Length: 297
Image (cartoon, rainbow, N blue to C red; front, side, top):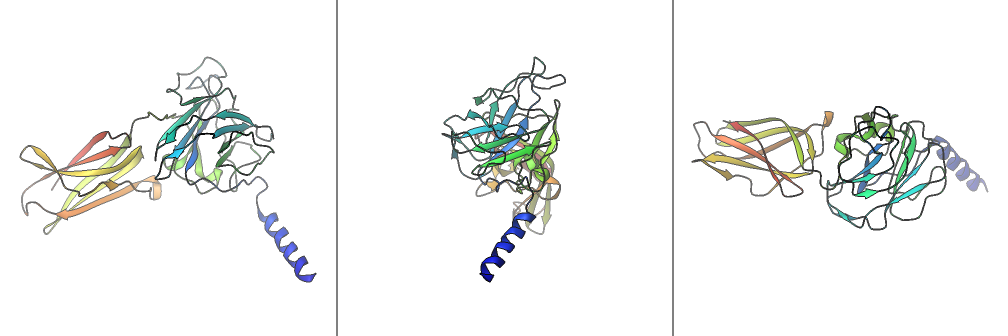
């Protein structure tokens, strides 16, 4: 009896330490990357509400039977939008268009799924569910991912995401990839940037530098965005042609501090002396090649 009481007291202490609105752990495959509920309202940049998903894993994920669901900030009744039977590739987005509050704003990029849910602009809860069945309860379990924003009473971690508005959405940090299972820490409110499955690959190159040390060449580059990018190739200019130097694709990296990514490639110099030109190329999920910049030794 003494042991049973001690265990019960310890369990109650653990439960008491959990935040009242905390939901389950985050996803390691598909995440809710952006939520916008001001569509069509006064001052809205877009004419419909939307929910954006992102595959943060390294493998395709089939969404057959999955749903996006919404409830009000403290509500327990969930509205459901089915997702299409598609295989979402690594680092690929999916755009779910929802209801409109008016005629203001530009048309969204072509949605991959269409629902009729009217999301509140400043507070609410959105869940990604691997089932067609509607959730129950104000803070349900069994979800793939959940985001509470504004004054929501259910959320991942210690706090809800910041309140968005007619002009702003809530967006997952690090280009949609940050997931510490804390909505308050993982999301920012910013101008909406809806992306669908056809959104092109994009990379923002901040610097690209070539350096020689003896007979060794080192290429350094720094990026601030790698959307839909699977990796890089490096080339050397030679007699009016470009010769690829890397033996295999140089993969993208998780962001470092400040959401920046620092890359490096090293190999032998083709010529010990004299200036040489090197070119950086990004490769997108769609196979598209993007020439980013040149560097000289």
